[in-house]
Image (cartoon, rainbow, N blue to C red; front, side):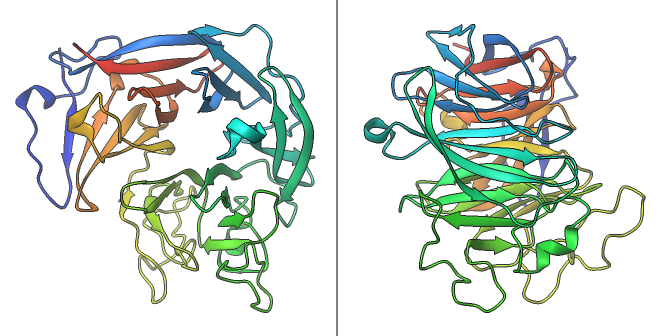
Length: 376
């Protein structure tokens, strides 16, 4: 029997001896684990994200373009009706469905998805009223510019801020990576729009000649997770590198996060992307991973079920087939831990539920929704 693996970073943290040791066998729960993993739903087609509704039910987004409802632990046999057609190819598809902050009164659900054709496609954001079974009055409120001819690197994560504005993550389109450094396009950016798609007057590049006004930050490769910590007020985002160079950043408006001018990764051909790992005017990541773990999904734990995880970041690791816990002390990375590797699954999404448990989505044709509970 093997146990969880702790990886020290800049600081050394103390954990119980029961949490240390070699890698887990895929089908075994770790000995002396302080958690258990409970299946909630199965038969999900490459689930990509999840949303918790006020009535206790959940929505699961499938990349292929369906939204599935789970209530009282039962997966509805019928998908949500009224979902717009998506460009489903390679990494393209339906990405997120999140609630408007005033969902209880306006019933608005916001979607991000790939739209178009193989030769001309882009990330879109739409909103619609959701009645529990169907979407109504669908309205496209934003589309990324320019169109591209690659079916990859869309970003696609959505996050409402306390002021009611919406952050939208975008990818660099893979073949368009230089676009991440220029402000005349939306690729490789985090964007900020109002809930109707209009531009907030206080966005950092409003009024700058040649800059698109929706841009909030730039120099990103493919942001696959974004969150705001309600305690510190910080916005954290993680993004994929190429071969290595995955990053977690603390994102602030107007700042340049470097891609592809600075990176700790190399190209898939083995060539260097850039000779620089730092450059004046470009932000350094809070943390980078080389070799790559391919982070996906993101949460900061502020629940009451796992006090030992309070204030820590959690990201799925598609390449490593585990969830990576990043332990923070005073906002700095103090250590990392690999969790749930016994599943032997690609973890696409990790979220903290309103009940204080962690929820995971496994990325495969017959994917699952799993709940992580205390062992006792």
